[in-house]
Length: 78
Image (cartoon, rainbow, N blue to C red; front, side):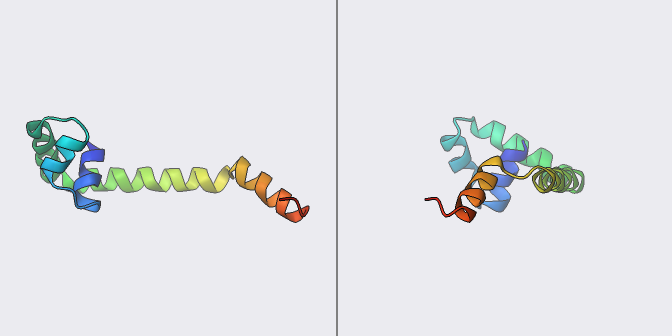
């Protein structure tokens, strides 16, 4: 359901686009949006907490690929 909210609210997709692009029924998309609008504050808070959690994980666990690329750059490798 959060994906539908993100596609609609943050990416500006209409319900028809979401249903067609993600092979969902239009009624399912509208049901998810209706639930969201009835519980907006708690769902927004949950999504913000999830984003904060992911950012904290990224901060604590640096990308191994990025580390390797930085090491190569420091060693003058291409």
